[in-house]
Length: 295
Image 1 (cartoon, rainbow, N blue to C red):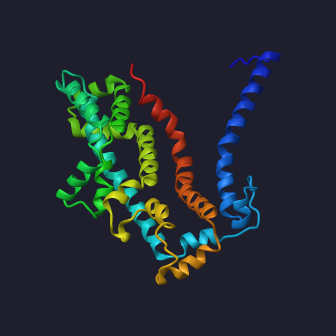
Image 2: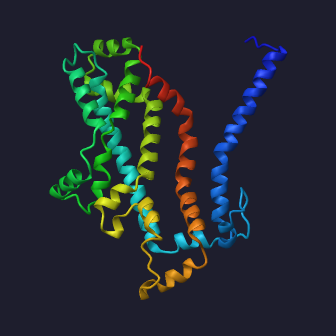
Image 3: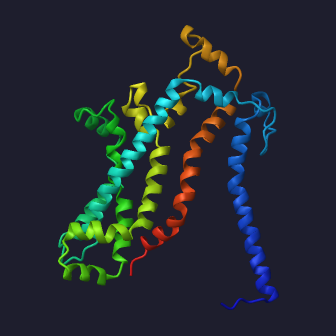
């Protein structure tokens, strides 16, 4: 490999590195600031003088968030929701993407179904029809209302079937010569080759499911079915210091502020994604590139 050693080339590389470092710092700063605020004394945090390092170290905000059983109950609901959505959603995506990756001579109605799914996936019926539908299907206050609406993701289907259409067509021809049917192709041929795009849609599913909180606000009334994001969003507004049963909680809030408490909630909810992303990152770019470009 021949590399240019001219002054202009080195200057250009230096400028690119400086720009990338600046972008990295600009991306990292809000995370550092949020963690610093969550670990600071509430009075100092309210003064707005904290930049990227805590002042007056205090763990009271984290203790307030985690010092009750409901936090871990909601954490378990979120983990269970992510695992079930990831497994079932991947199965649904693969089964839907496989026929769309076939040629029109093999699946004559392919383009018609694609347009139907594109139109349906681009519009939402609204909260009221969705609420009435959930009530009629006995899904109100039911754990499955947090899972079923997210199993079918048309964007993931497009990503997977475009990834498969970029694979050499000779693979499919060889499988036909060997007498392999659709199920054998899907399981033994396409699945082992799909790790990059599988990691990509898994990352999308994990992040979207982990961050989603509004579904439970509308459809869940049982506190034991609240996912973590919804619980953290409501943890402050559900406390009424004037009620006798909440006097102890109100006293705990005097040791924190809304700013430090919100920062602690944000910092805690960032951790799972920060742990998961490094393991999937090496597949991410490869999967999304091959899945978005068609020959």
